[in-house]
Image (cartoon, rainbow, N blue to C red; front, side, top):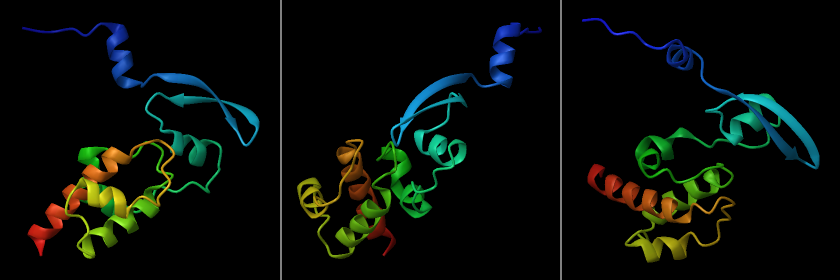
Length: 131
């Protein structure tokens, strides 16, 4: 038995969709042609060469954050990582309410607070079992 893949489908598998994206960055209109999987952070850093935005370190994402998808833009990631680690180490990650209160001073532009709390709870449980 043999199967054939329609030409359109095989082309889509071999070449991800490219999109024309229009962004207003620092008051200037910018048009980019991007792979449909490009994140906003990667578009800013890799295509517009605006390297001020940072991805943060990989430790938060390797432990628990990938599963709970805590952020979209990564604006707050460095501060959230440091606060979450301190929250756990100081014994304040007892429940979601305690974590929210402890980390309330962090500004998150994409509104991912519920996911950040979930990731911190997961990291706290994981770190407790590893200790």
